[in-house]
Amino acid sequence: MKDIMGMMKKVQEMQSKMTALQDELETLEVEGAAGGGMVKATMTAKGQVKSVSIDDSLLNADEKDILEDLIIAAMNDARGKADRAAQEKMSSITAGLPIPPGMKLF
Image (cartoon, rainbow, N blue to C red; front, side, top):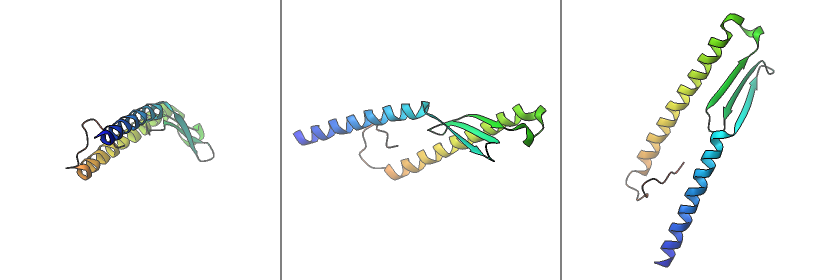
C-alpha cells in the first residue's frame, strides 16, 4: 500500500508542475513573421493571438485596423474550436479509465 501512496504523491507533483507550466505558457509570447516581416503575429505559447501587424503597402491604410482585428478574431475562433475538438477526442479516448477527477492530461 505504501508504494501506491508514493505513486499518488508523484502523480500529484506532476500535476502541480503541469499546472505551473500551463500558466507559464499562457504568458510566454512569441512573434511570427511572413513576407519578409511585412506581416507579423504575436501570440502566447498556448496559441492565443495577441496582435497582428500588416505593412501598409499590402492594403488600404483606412481599413488596416479593421482587417487586423478580423484576423485576430478569426484565428482565436479557430483556436477555440480546435481546443474543443481536442477535448472531445481526449474524452472519448479516456472514457472508462479510472482517472482521478480534475486530473488534466494535456
